[in-house]
Image 1 (cartoon, rainbow over the protein chains, first blue to last red):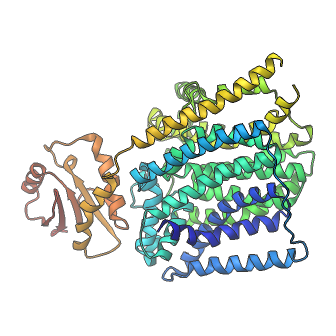
Image 2 (cartoon, each protein chain N blue to C red; image 1 turned 90 degrees about the vertical axis):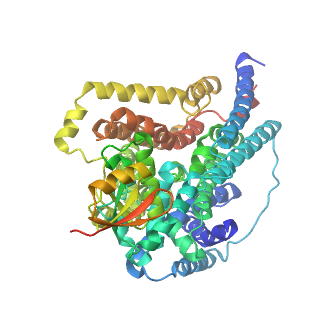
Image 3 (spheres, each protein chain N blue to C red; image 1 turned 60 degrees about the vertical axis):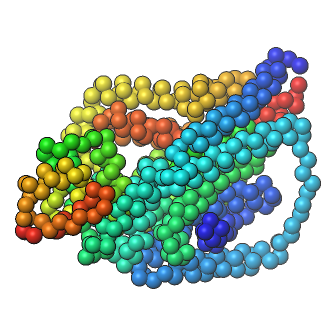
Length: 458
Length: 142
């Protein structure tokens, strides 16, 4: 059943890879790996969006796999037609330095440990962690178990603790594959979480390998996989890892645009940001913060063009998200306080102190490495020195602004939350920091000196 | 080799060692989650499976009461929300709303709590007793 689930997802993921390639025709094996890991998430995202539309139109039918196969065939034809005179495979010999071999060996061990952790979590908690079964797998059950009446899943009679207002990225993907395989097996959400883990770690590594070096990619991946964030948190089937993946995809694509100025990359970045909004409510905040960040960062480089291409990619997923929010989803509980009470809470100094203390404590201890990964990165930056490229300044600025504005947004949500503040922080802050940590790792390792260069100069 | 170069090498070795060490710790933590033979969610599914057979509809809204809804009955406040969410997950696509105001209500009551509840609701519900302290209640009075 695990293999079958992967096979059912395969046409969607391949379609994703082809979409990336059609919009970004960069060649070379380093770019191919980036395209594969971007394509996995984009493919899973487009399948979820299209299945939502399919279910609105044909909820009594079970033909969505056919839609994905037709999409894949159409994209493949388009790629073959475009590439028929350019197709050539060149294999250049790969040579590793001794430093790279040491780093890759360390990475291999950490990757195996992380994979074993994930397998253990899946075997011991097949339904996922609390939030996973309560929100995402529950949503998938509501859709799958009564297809023709699936719109009843968003009833306002549902207790708000189940968050029926949450976007349906995971729920739709799980439900349509259940429909295809003909049974409600936990292997499907497990495979889905595994694919996002692979895509997230793979994209971080592939993008740093392409933009910096293999050594830089390896050390970043050792940091990511050596923490509990991928193997344990990612395997829990919650939406935070897919969300972190879509944040990472967006910032990687913005970075690549800054270095190559190809508009297709901005279309893809917008699409990925839209998929973040389709994954979790924090993704809608992400969409909002990326707009001013892009405008400011590319202010001297035709900012309206940048925003135009970005909005083009954003349009389709955001139309679906807005339709869902406007016409189907019950109201969000986080905004349930009303304006006056929210203002009162925002003016309460004690809430600011609690939130700031919690943010500080979490940033200093985050990652489960005892002293916290951020202080380690600070020491790393001092020892290896920063080496930012002036040509990429708009990318650094855009990504930094996105991360800072997103963190400020989280701060604001805690200020106005209708829940007990300390409970809400304890319950969610670690996962919010995780969402920003993955794109931050990418930014950090693009700015800091490559390990190969740092050690070669001596 | 200057001091910075030494520090860089120490830093890299330290990060690889830390990655492996904490990778092992994370694996141990993953092994410590629950156990291989029983999963609480799956057990809950088995317990509530019979309820659906007695309901006359596949999708709809039913009530849900537990010991905490019965005055005088003892209950563990820590379990209340967990059991409610587990039950909702299990019963999907039936929507569970707290209380017994719906035509059908699922009662998750221990023997003592059910006795107390029966005394104060006599004649208002048809009671379908199920296994494991579960009762399906059909409201007789509007």
